Length: 354
Image 1 (tube, rainbow, N blue to C red):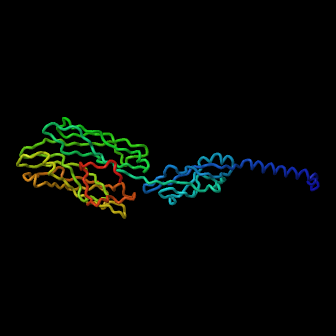
Image 2 (cartoon, rainbow, N blue to C red):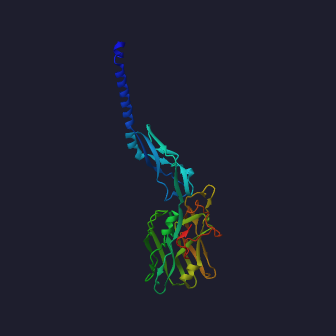
Image 3 (cartoon, helix red, strand yellow):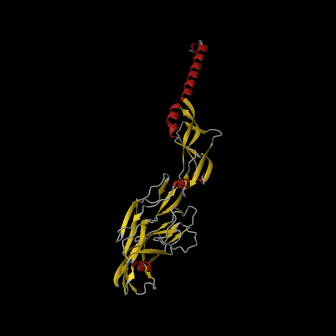
């Protein structure tokens, strides 16, 4: 039997070697090596930071493996970077890992191309204060006593570079012609340029205008539309009232002009909640608070007037942290006492950067 195996052994060995070479070549033909660009998966950033334009979106790698695997899985491969490596400005960082891989697929960095450029920008906010414009005058013996806007302002959030597109945002003019009683007009929230958005999902803005008779007779009367003002508001907080105005029942011994009454009355509430910068929370909590309305009168101009009641005598106050807190701002720095008048008719900057 050994003789039979050794018989013509040179030819048999040559056949084995040839078969081995064919097998090795067949296996090598199934292996594919490619250089491809895979997508960079940006990490989620906090503190108002966002990935800016001009950042790398792909990363070059070498992919090696069975041909079918390389062709099938390459489109789903992703490169990941660490959020702790990213800071405001331009960052040149390493890719920390790859995703979408599987056994039998080898991914490696290309020498000299192992870093990516990521630009980080900070979202900022601006408060758009709506200052209504009026045209015309009410009929004789009627006057516009006050007005209030709801909401009085809206916070716009976006990338700093996008705010260059934001011009003056205003409401259409409101006509006072032929108006003899209080009325409300509603407007669609002004559109914003692409890349900017309103912080709150507000669809419309309403403007209530109080029209009153220019004079009153002695006796009992009710005054409408006395604005509510906020005392001792923390400079880091915003206060939203359930009622922006109250009505006052009074008794007058002498005739008074309506504008004299409106300007001589003041409705105020104490805004007592505070913002704790350490815990970044509202104290004692962020739930609505009921507050008593305190009515004050100017004793010089309203000396003969007796206040009999205010309606409603309590309102709800909802506190919110100002949008600029946590973005490097610490609230108002104008040296004021923290008081706020959400119904002031004084023109305010529009827009104003927080």
